[in-house]
Image (tube, rainbow, N blue to C red; front, top):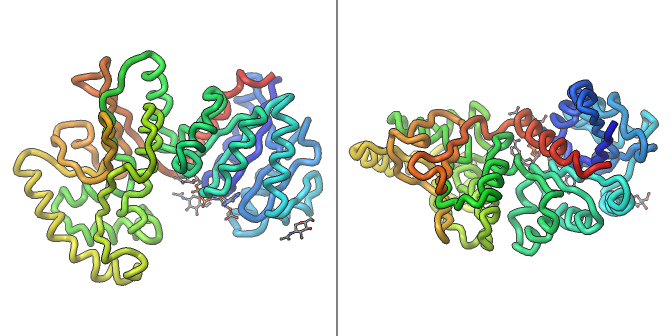
Length: 376
Ligand SMILES: NC(=O)c1ccc[n+]([C@@H]2O[C@H](COP(=O)([O-])OP(=O)(O)OC[C@H]3O[C@@H](n4cnc5c(N)ncnc54)[C@H](OP(=O)(O)O)[C@@H]3O)[C@@H](O)[C@H]2O)c1
Ligand SMILES: *[C@@H]1O[C@H](CO)[C@@H](O)[C@H](O)[C@H]1NC(C)=O
Ligand SMILES: *[C@@H]1O[C@H](CO)[C@@H](O)[C@H](O)[C@H]1NC(C)=O
Protein backbone atom coordinates (compact mmCIF):
# COMPACT_ATOMS: atom_id res chain seq x y z
CA UNK A 1 0.00 0.00 0.00
CA UNK A 2 1.28 3.44 -0.97
CA UNK A 3 0.71 6.06 1.71
CA UNK A 4 0.27 9.75 0.88
CA UNK A 5 0.74 11.88 4.01
CA UNK A 6 -1.00 15.23 4.06
CA UNK A 7 -1.76 18.20 6.27
CA UNK A 8 -4.99 20.06 5.67
CA UNK A 9 -4.79 23.84 6.15
CA UNK A 10 -8.26 25.36 6.49
CA UNK A 11 -11.24 23.32 7.52
CA UNK A 12 -14.30 25.32 6.48
CA UNK A 13 -16.83 24.27 3.85
CA UNK A 14 -14.29 22.87 1.40
CA UNK A 15 -11.83 21.44 3.93
CA UNK A 16 -14.56 19.59 5.83
CA UNK A 17 -15.99 18.15 2.64
CA UNK A 18 -12.52 17.01 1.69
CA UNK A 19 -12.19 15.09 4.96
CA UNK A 20 -15.58 13.49 4.32
CA UNK A 21 -14.54 12.50 0.79
CA UNK A 22 -11.25 11.02 2.05
CA UNK A 23 -13.09 8.86 4.56
CA UNK A 24 -15.81 7.75 2.15
CA UNK A 25 -13.25 6.89 -0.58
CA UNK A 26 -11.21 4.59 1.69
CA UNK A 27 -12.28 1.37 -0.03
CA UNK A 28 -11.96 2.83 -3.53
CA UNK A 29 -8.46 4.09 -2.76
CA UNK A 30 -7.37 0.86 -1.13
CA UNK A 31 -8.39 -1.03 -4.30
CA UNK A 32 -6.00 1.32 -6.09
CA UNK A 33 -3.31 0.58 -3.50
CA UNK A 34 -3.54 4.02 -1.95
CA UNK A 35 -3.89 5.32 1.58
CA UNK A 36 -4.37 9.04 2.25
CA UNK A 37 -2.81 9.58 5.65
CA UNK A 38 -4.07 12.77 7.28
CA UNK A 39 -1.21 13.78 9.57
CA UNK A 40 -2.82 17.01 10.70
CA UNK A 41 -5.60 19.55 10.26
CA UNK A 42 -5.55 23.23 11.09
CA UNK A 43 -7.90 26.20 11.02
CA UNK A 44 -7.16 29.84 11.85
CA UNK A 45 -6.81 29.14 15.56
CA UNK A 46 -5.31 25.72 16.11
CA UNK A 47 -3.49 22.76 14.61
CA UNK A 48 -4.14 19.17 15.52
CA UNK A 49 -1.52 16.57 14.74
CA UNK A 50 -1.71 12.81 14.89
CA UNK A 51 0.37 11.29 17.72
CA UNK A 52 1.76 8.76 15.28
CA UNK A 53 1.87 10.87 12.16
CA UNK A 54 4.67 8.86 10.54
CA UNK A 55 2.68 5.66 10.40
CA UNK A 56 -0.96 6.05 11.16
CA UNK A 57 -2.25 9.58 10.85
CA UNK A 58 -5.50 10.76 12.38
CA UNK A 59 -8.12 8.09 12.75
CA UNK A 60 -11.21 8.33 10.51
CA UNK A 61 -13.38 8.75 13.59
CA UNK A 62 -11.34 11.83 14.53
CA UNK A 63 -11.59 13.20 10.98
CA UNK A 64 -15.37 12.91 11.09
CA UNK A 65 -15.44 14.42 14.56
CA UNK A 66 -13.34 17.31 13.18
CA UNK A 67 -16.05 18.00 10.58
CA UNK A 68 -18.76 17.80 13.22
CA UNK A 69 -16.92 20.17 15.55
CA UNK A 70 -16.24 22.68 12.76
CA UNK A 71 -19.80 22.67 11.47
CA UNK A 72 -21.01 23.30 15.02
CA UNK A 73 -18.70 26.34 15.12
CA UNK A 74 -16.58 24.88 17.92
CA UNK A 75 -12.83 24.94 18.41
CA UNK A 76 -10.53 22.21 17.09
CA UNK A 77 -8.87 22.18 20.50
CA UNK A 78 -11.85 20.10 21.69
CA UNK A 79 -10.25 17.20 19.80
CA UNK A 80 -7.52 17.09 22.44
CA UNK A 81 -10.03 15.27 24.66
CA UNK A 82 -10.09 12.29 22.27
CA UNK A 83 -6.45 11.37 22.73
CA UNK A 84 -4.36 10.15 19.79
CA UNK A 85 -3.71 13.73 18.76
CA UNK A 86 -1.84 16.81 19.92
CA UNK A 87 -3.23 20.33 19.80
CA UNK A 88 -1.19 23.48 19.07
CA UNK A 89 -2.28 27.11 19.08
CA UNK A 90 -2.03 29.54 16.18
CA UNK A 91 1.34 30.95 17.30
CA UNK A 92 2.88 27.50 17.14
CA UNK A 93 1.06 26.03 14.17
CA UNK A 94 3.05 27.36 11.20
CA UNK A 95 6.35 26.44 12.84
CA UNK A 96 5.06 23.00 13.65
CA UNK A 97 3.83 22.42 10.09
CA UNK A 98 7.25 23.43 8.76
CA UNK A 99 9.01 21.04 11.17
CA UNK A 100 6.98 18.17 9.78
CA UNK A 101 7.41 19.42 6.22
CA UNK A 102 11.19 19.39 6.51
CA UNK A 103 11.16 16.00 8.18
CA UNK A 104 8.83 14.30 5.69
CA UNK A 105 9.89 16.30 2.63
CA UNK A 106 13.26 14.58 2.76
CA UNK A 107 11.85 11.09 3.27
CA UNK A 108 8.33 9.97 2.43
CA UNK A 109 7.09 13.28 1.04
CA UNK A 110 4.15 15.33 2.31
CA UNK A 111 1.27 17.20 0.68
CA UNK A 112 0.20 20.54 2.14
CA UNK A 113 -3.42 21.08 1.17
CA UNK A 114 -4.51 24.73 1.31
CA UNK A 115 -8.27 25.00 1.72
CA UNK A 116 -8.04 28.27 3.61
CA UNK A 117 -9.05 31.64 2.25
CA UNK A 118 -5.99 33.29 3.72
CA UNK A 119 -2.99 35.03 2.20
CA UNK A 120 -0.87 34.39 5.32
CA UNK A 121 -0.25 30.83 4.33
CA UNK A 122 1.89 31.51 1.27
CA UNK A 123 5.09 31.80 3.34
CA UNK A 124 4.53 28.34 4.77
CA UNK A 125 3.77 26.91 1.33
CA UNK A 126 6.90 28.41 -0.22
CA UNK A 127 9.13 27.05 2.53
CA UNK A 128 7.47 23.66 2.24
CA UNK A 129 8.22 23.61 -1.49
CA UNK A 130 11.87 24.32 -0.66
CA UNK A 131 12.12 21.30 1.60
CA UNK A 132 10.62 18.91 -0.96
CA UNK A 133 6.88 18.93 -0.23
CA UNK A 134 3.94 18.94 -2.63
CA UNK A 135 1.24 21.62 -2.51
CA UNK A 136 -2.43 21.36 -3.47
CA UNK A 137 -4.56 24.52 -3.35
CA UNK A 138 -8.21 25.50 -3.52
CA UNK A 139 -7.11 28.89 -2.17
CA UNK A 140 -6.43 31.40 -4.97
CA UNK A 141 -4.52 33.91 -2.87
CA UNK A 142 -1.08 32.23 -2.89
CA UNK A 143 -1.17 32.23 -6.71
CA UNK A 144 -2.45 35.77 -7.12
CA UNK A 145 -0.05 37.76 -4.98
CA UNK A 146 3.39 38.62 -6.35
CA UNK A 147 4.90 37.01 -9.42
CA UNK A 148 7.85 35.99 -7.19
CA UNK A 149 5.52 33.95 -4.96
CA UNK A 150 3.91 32.34 -7.98
CA UNK A 151 7.22 31.34 -9.51
CA UNK A 152 8.54 30.11 -6.19
CA UNK A 153 5.52 27.84 -5.74
CA UNK A 154 6.06 26.49 -9.26
CA UNK A 155 9.76 25.75 -8.70
CA UNK A 156 8.89 22.08 -9.17
CA UNK A 157 5.78 22.19 -11.37
CA UNK A 158 5.09 18.47 -10.99
CA UNK A 159 4.63 18.90 -7.25
CA UNK A 160 1.92 21.53 -7.37
CA UNK A 161 -1.77 21.17 -8.20
CA UNK A 162 -4.51 23.81 -8.00
CA UNK A 163 -7.40 22.61 -10.15
CA UNK A 164 -10.04 23.96 -7.76
CA UNK A 165 -8.75 27.53 -7.90
CA UNK A 166 -10.55 28.07 -11.23
CA UNK A 167 -14.01 26.63 -11.87
CA UNK A 168 -13.99 24.49 -8.70
CA UNK A 169 -13.90 20.81 -9.71
CA UNK A 170 -14.12 21.48 -13.47
CA UNK A 171 -10.99 20.32 -15.32
CA UNK A 172 -9.99 23.78 -16.53
CA UNK A 173 -6.37 23.82 -15.35
CA UNK A 174 -5.75 20.20 -16.31
CA UNK A 175 -7.11 20.78 -19.81
CA UNK A 176 -5.03 23.92 -20.27
CA UNK A 177 -1.88 22.19 -19.05
CA UNK A 178 -2.40 19.37 -21.55
CA UNK A 179 -2.86 21.86 -24.37
CA UNK A 180 0.24 23.78 -23.31
CA UNK A 181 2.34 20.60 -23.00
CA UNK A 182 1.39 19.55 -26.51
CA UNK A 183 2.68 22.82 -27.91
CA UNK A 184 -0.76 23.86 -29.13
CA UNK A 185 -0.71 27.66 -28.82
CA UNK A 186 -3.58 29.16 -26.80
CA UNK A 187 -4.84 32.20 -28.68
CA UNK A 188 -7.75 33.19 -26.51
CA UNK A 189 -9.57 32.17 -23.37
CA UNK A 190 -12.97 33.59 -22.60
CA UNK A 191 -14.87 32.37 -19.60
CA UNK A 192 -17.77 33.00 -17.29
CA UNK A 193 -16.14 32.07 -14.00
CA UNK A 194 -18.61 33.38 -11.45
CA UNK A 195 -21.75 31.37 -10.82
CA UNK A 196 -23.35 34.46 -9.30
CA UNK A 197 -22.61 36.73 -12.25
CA UNK A 198 -23.57 33.99 -14.72
CA UNK A 199 -26.96 33.77 -13.04
CA UNK A 200 -27.35 37.55 -12.86
CA UNK A 201 -26.51 38.10 -16.55
CA UNK A 202 -28.83 35.38 -17.80
CA UNK A 203 -31.68 36.74 -15.69
CA UNK A 204 -31.27 40.35 -16.85
CA UNK A 205 -31.26 38.98 -20.40
CA UNK A 206 -34.87 37.94 -19.77
CA UNK A 207 -35.75 41.57 -19.02
CA UNK A 208 -35.72 41.42 -15.23
CA UNK A 209 -34.29 44.48 -13.45
CA UNK A 210 -30.75 44.03 -12.12
CA UNK A 211 -31.80 45.07 -8.62
CA UNK A 212 -34.50 42.42 -8.45
CA UNK A 213 -32.18 39.73 -9.82
CA UNK A 214 -29.40 40.51 -7.33
CA UNK A 215 -31.82 40.54 -4.39
CA UNK A 216 -33.23 37.18 -5.54
CA UNK A 217 -29.70 35.78 -5.97
CA UNK A 218 -28.86 36.89 -2.45
CA UNK A 219 -31.93 35.26 -0.95
CA UNK A 220 -31.16 32.03 -2.86
CA UNK A 221 -27.73 32.06 -1.20
CA UNK A 222 -25.92 32.51 -4.55
CA UNK A 223 -24.05 35.64 -3.48
CA UNK A 224 -21.58 36.55 -0.78
CA UNK A 225 -23.24 38.16 2.28
CA UNK A 226 -22.37 41.51 0.66
CA UNK A 227 -23.24 40.98 -3.05
CA UNK A 228 -20.74 43.68 -3.99
CA UNK A 229 -18.02 41.09 -3.32
CA UNK A 230 -19.36 39.29 -6.40
CA UNK A 231 -20.43 42.32 -8.45
CA UNK A 232 -17.02 43.98 -8.12
CA UNK A 233 -15.39 41.25 -10.23
CA UNK A 234 -12.37 40.74 -7.96
CA UNK A 235 -12.90 37.00 -7.61
CA UNK A 236 -13.17 36.58 -11.39
CA UNK A 237 -10.03 38.70 -11.78
CA UNK A 238 -8.10 36.38 -9.45
CA UNK A 239 -9.10 33.41 -11.59
CA UNK A 240 -8.19 35.31 -14.76
CA UNK A 241 -4.78 36.11 -13.30
CA UNK A 242 -4.16 32.44 -12.53
CA UNK A 243 -5.10 31.46 -16.10
CA UNK A 244 -2.95 34.21 -17.62
CA UNK A 245 0.04 33.24 -15.50
CA UNK A 246 -0.38 29.57 -16.49
CA UNK A 247 -0.15 30.74 -20.08
CA UNK A 248 3.17 32.30 -19.20
CA UNK A 249 2.15 35.93 -18.81
CA UNK A 250 4.22 37.51 -16.06
CA UNK A 251 1.53 39.94 -14.92
CA UNK A 252 0.08 41.16 -11.64
CA UNK A 253 -3.41 41.95 -10.47
CA UNK A 254 -2.96 45.64 -11.26
CA UNK A 255 -2.50 44.94 -14.97
CA UNK A 256 -5.95 43.36 -15.20
CA UNK A 257 -8.67 45.71 -16.34
CA UNK A 258 -11.68 45.03 -14.10
CA UNK A 259 -15.19 46.35 -14.76
CA UNK A 260 -17.19 46.58 -11.55
CA UNK A 261 -20.97 46.32 -11.86
CA UNK A 262 -21.40 49.06 -9.25
CA UNK A 263 -19.88 52.57 -9.31
CA UNK A 264 -17.25 53.84 -6.86
CA UNK A 265 -19.74 55.94 -4.93
CA UNK A 266 -21.54 52.73 -3.91
CA UNK A 267 -18.37 51.09 -2.53
CA UNK A 268 -18.69 49.33 0.84
CA UNK A 269 -16.81 52.12 2.67
CA UNK A 270 -19.33 54.70 1.42
CA UNK A 271 -22.62 52.78 1.50
CA UNK A 272 -23.98 50.08 3.80
CA UNK A 273 -25.15 46.75 2.36
CA UNK A 274 -28.73 47.61 3.29
CA UNK A 275 -28.55 50.94 1.45
CA UNK A 276 -26.94 49.29 -1.54
CA UNK A 277 -29.62 46.60 -1.77
CA UNK A 278 -32.39 49.03 -0.91
CA UNK A 279 -31.75 52.08 -3.10
CA UNK A 280 -28.24 51.89 -4.67
CA UNK A 281 -28.89 48.89 -6.88
CA UNK A 282 -32.11 50.25 -8.40
CA UNK A 283 -30.13 53.21 -9.78
CA UNK A 284 -28.19 50.74 -11.93
CA UNK A 285 -31.24 49.03 -13.49
CA UNK A 286 -31.78 51.41 -16.38
CA UNK A 287 -28.22 51.37 -17.70
CA UNK A 288 -27.98 47.56 -17.71
CA UNK A 289 -31.39 47.24 -19.30
CA UNK A 290 -30.34 49.58 -22.12
CA UNK A 291 -27.17 47.61 -22.69
CA UNK A 292 -29.13 44.35 -22.77
CA UNK A 293 -31.54 45.77 -25.35
CA UNK A 294 -28.79 47.23 -27.50
CA UNK A 295 -27.01 43.86 -27.56
CA UNK A 296 -30.25 42.00 -28.30
CA UNK A 297 -30.93 44.21 -31.32
CA UNK A 298 -27.72 42.79 -32.81
CA UNK A 299 -28.51 39.18 -31.88
CA UNK A 300 -26.09 39.33 -28.97
CA UNK A 301 -26.27 38.81 -25.23
CA UNK A 302 -24.25 40.25 -22.36
CA UNK A 303 -22.01 38.03 -20.26
CA UNK A 304 -19.68 38.88 -17.42
CA UNK A 305 -16.47 37.19 -18.50
CA UNK A 306 -12.71 37.19 -18.38
CA UNK A 307 -10.92 37.52 -21.69
CA UNK A 308 -7.28 36.57 -22.05
CA UNK A 309 -5.87 37.23 -25.47
CA UNK A 310 -2.43 38.41 -26.66
CA UNK A 311 -1.17 40.72 -23.93
CA UNK A 312 -4.71 41.57 -22.85
CA UNK A 313 -6.37 40.33 -19.67
CA UNK A 314 -9.77 41.88 -19.00
CA UNK A 315 -12.69 41.16 -16.71
CA UNK A 316 -16.14 42.63 -17.33
CA UNK A 317 -19.27 42.65 -19.47
CA UNK A 318 -18.87 41.57 -23.11
CA UNK A 319 -21.40 41.34 -25.92
CA UNK A 320 -21.35 37.82 -27.29
CA UNK A 321 -23.30 35.99 -29.99
CA UNK A 322 -26.45 34.45 -28.57
CA UNK A 323 -25.62 31.28 -30.41
CA UNK A 324 -22.24 30.55 -28.82
CA UNK A 325 -21.38 28.35 -25.84
CA UNK A 326 -21.22 31.41 -23.56
CA UNK A 327 -24.27 32.99 -25.19
CA UNK A 328 -26.31 29.85 -24.53
CA UNK A 329 -25.31 29.78 -20.87
CA UNK A 330 -28.25 29.88 -18.45
CA UNK A 331 -28.08 29.94 -14.68
CA UNK A 332 -25.05 29.54 -12.48
CA UNK A 333 -22.81 27.16 -14.47
CA UNK A 334 -19.30 28.22 -15.34
CA UNK A 335 -18.32 28.07 -19.02
CA UNK A 336 -14.82 28.40 -20.42
CA UNK A 337 -14.10 28.63 -24.16
CA UNK A 338 -10.50 27.92 -25.16
CA UNK A 339 -9.30 28.82 -28.66
CA UNK A 340 -6.04 27.24 -29.83
CA UNK A 341 -4.56 26.13 -33.13
CA UNK A 342 -6.31 22.73 -32.75
CA UNK A 343 -9.52 24.36 -31.50
CA UNK A 344 -9.64 27.39 -33.73
CA UNK A 345 -13.12 27.80 -35.21
CA UNK A 346 -14.93 25.78 -32.61
CA UNK A 347 -13.40 26.28 -29.16
CA UNK A 348 -12.79 23.63 -26.57
CA UNK A 349 -15.64 24.19 -24.10
CA UNK A 350 -15.63 23.25 -20.44
CA UNK A 351 -18.93 23.72 -18.64
CA UNK A 352 -20.49 22.77 -15.32
CA UNK A 353 -20.96 23.84 -11.73
CA UNK A 354 -18.07 26.13 -10.82
CA UNK A 355 -18.62 26.34 -7.09
CA UNK A 356 -19.89 24.36 -4.14
CA UNK A 357 -18.13 22.64 -1.26
CA UNK A 358 -18.67 19.17 -2.64
CA UNK A 359 -17.33 19.67 -6.20
CA UNK A 360 -14.50 21.93 -5.01
CA UNK A 361 -13.40 19.33 -2.46
CA UNK A 362 -13.68 16.60 -5.11
CA UNK A 363 -11.30 18.62 -7.29
CA UNK A 364 -8.86 18.89 -4.40
CA UNK A 365 -9.04 15.16 -3.72
CA UNK A 366 -8.38 14.32 -7.37
CA UNK A 367 -5.35 16.65 -7.25
CA UNK A 368 -3.95 14.82 -4.21
CA UNK A 369 -4.46 11.40 -5.80
CA UNK A 370 -2.82 12.71 -8.98
CA UNK A 371 0.42 13.20 -7.02
CA UNK A 372 0.67 9.54 -6.05
CA UNK A 373 3.60 8.70 -8.34
CA UNK A 374 5.80 11.07 -6.35
CA UNK A 375 5.35 8.93 -3.22
CA UNK A 376 7.30 5.77 -2.39
N1 LIG B 1 -16.66 27.04 -1.53
C1 LIG B 1 -16.48 27.04 -2.85
O1 LIG B 1 -17.40 26.82 -3.62
C2 LIG B 1 -15.11 27.30 -3.42
C3 LIG B 1 -14.87 27.10 -4.78
C4 LIG B 1 -13.57 27.28 -5.29
C5 LIG B 1 -12.55 27.69 -4.45
N2 LIG B 1 -12.82 27.92 -3.13
C6 LIG B 1 -11.73 28.37 -2.27
O2 LIG B 1 -11.49 27.38 -1.29
C7 LIG B 1 -11.03 27.99 -0.10
C8 LIG B 1 -11.89 27.51 1.07
O3 LIG B 1 -13.22 27.94 0.85
P1 LIG B 1 -14.34 27.70 1.96
O4 LIG B 1 -15.62 28.03 1.32
O5 LIG B 1 -14.15 26.37 2.58
O6 LIG B 1 -13.95 28.84 3.03
P2 LIG B 1 -14.31 28.89 4.58
O7 LIG B 1 -15.51 28.07 4.84
O8 LIG B 1 -14.27 30.31 4.94
O9 LIG B 1 -13.09 28.14 5.28
C9 LIG B 1 -11.82 28.71 5.40
C10 LIG B 1 -11.03 27.92 6.42
O10 LIG B 1 -9.69 28.42 6.45
C11 LIG B 1 -9.32 28.62 7.79
N3 LIG B 1 -8.27 29.64 7.87
C12 LIG B 1 -8.38 30.99 7.70
N4 LIG B 1 -7.19 31.57 7.89
C13 LIG B 1 -6.30 30.59 8.17
C14 LIG B 1 -4.91 30.56 8.47
N5 LIG B 1 -4.18 31.67 8.51
N6 LIG B 1 -4.33 29.36 8.71
C15 LIG B 1 -5.07 28.22 8.67
N7 LIG B 1 -6.38 28.19 8.40
C16 LIG B 1 -6.99 29.36 8.15
C17 LIG B 1 -10.59 29.03 8.48
O11 LIG B 1 -10.42 28.86 9.87
P3 LIG B 1 -11.62 29.15 10.93
O12 LIG B 1 -12.54 27.97 10.78
O13 LIG B 1 -10.89 29.16 12.23
O14 LIG B 1 -12.21 30.45 10.55
C18 LIG B 1 -11.57 28.06 7.84
O15 LIG B 1 -11.51 26.82 8.48
C19 LIG B 1 -11.14 29.50 -0.33
O16 LIG B 1 -9.85 29.99 -0.67
C20 LIG B 1 -12.07 29.63 -1.50
O17 LIG B 1 -11.83 30.77 -2.28
C21 LIG B 1 -14.06 27.71 -2.61
C1 LIG C 1 -20.42 24.94 2.51
O1 LIG C 1 -20.08 24.56 3.82
C2 LIG C 1 -20.32 25.58 4.79
C3 LIG C 1 -19.77 25.09 6.11
O2 LIG C 1 -20.07 23.74 6.35
C4 LIG C 1 -21.81 25.89 4.85
O3 LIG C 1 -22.06 26.92 5.79
C5 LIG C 1 -22.26 26.32 3.48
O4 LIG C 1 -23.66 26.53 3.47
C6 LIG C 1 -21.89 25.28 2.44
N1 LIG C 1 -22.22 25.82 1.13
C7 LIG C 1 -22.97 25.17 0.27
C8 LIG C 1 -23.23 25.86 -1.02
O5 LIG C 1 -23.41 24.05 0.47
C1 LIG D 1 0.63 29.07 22.53
O1 LIG D 1 1.21 27.96 23.14
C2 LIG D 1 2.51 28.22 23.67
C3 LIG D 1 3.12 26.90 24.15
O2 LIG D 1 2.17 26.11 24.82
C4 LIG D 1 2.41 29.26 24.79
O3 LIG D 1 3.69 29.56 25.30
C5 LIG D 1 1.78 30.51 24.18
O4 LIG D 1 1.57 31.47 25.22
C6 LIG D 1 0.45 30.20 23.50
N1 LIG D 1 0.00 31.39 22.82
C7 LIG D 1 -1.25 31.79 22.84
C8 LIG D 1 -1.58 33.01 22.06
O5 LIG D 1 -2.11 31.18 23.46
